[in-house]
Length: 343
Image (cartoon, rainbow, N blue to C red; front, side, top):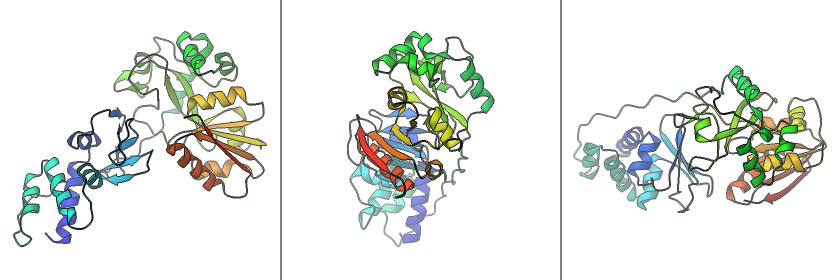
């Protein structure tokens, strides 16, 4: 096949394996996989970890893509196929990668053509290009406000208090500062407050934390599981946009809203460390909690030039990458402190 025909084969394989779960299944990556809404977490085929750290999702072009949050490996469906089969996408092995991909996708005519001599073409019908996936929206503000207003102080919820105490977080202080609330049993939830079709009250994700955009606007929530189970410990609303949002205490919200200029800003990773920092640091310190896809250049612009910034991400590769990205956006004009929190 010519190079142009190879590009057509790549297109057809990508289109046929555009569904993340199907790609995971045909590549044998199901062991330990954790399906999420819109993506699947799998054990990374590039570095062979034991805990899923690689996200396989559908990109804006409608095809599957992989990104490991631990080793930073990324690839399209063709790259995933090559990595799983121990092949290279360069040189003579590229044809073998395409053959493996075509067979995995059930494109037997394409696999047959790829195995034939270059001078023997074979007519075949191309696989239709999948429709681009539109970007999801944040939850409706009215639904968010109603859910938050009907939730109760976390100190009044036995399960919510217990999960915080286990992390050495004082539920009374959390309630006084209104950092988190608990969803009462029997609450009628919006359709996005679900995990794999089940409402959060059934899956145990009853502790809520608010997340805000770079202007300090309440845009979504994070739900924390308070009972034993094999579902994710913390998750965003189903089918709604989750990136570009951070956890923020009262001083940090004032900063994002351009109302105050804090002397100190602490940036931590994840909900537990956020609550620890908010309830243990001295008053007047702004605290922001981040996760994957949270921090953007817009947040960096909201940090006043005279604010001293401490970055305390987890003691792992992903935490280092978050810290590097934040430090790069803040630039050299701000005084930065950086240390590793416990993983």
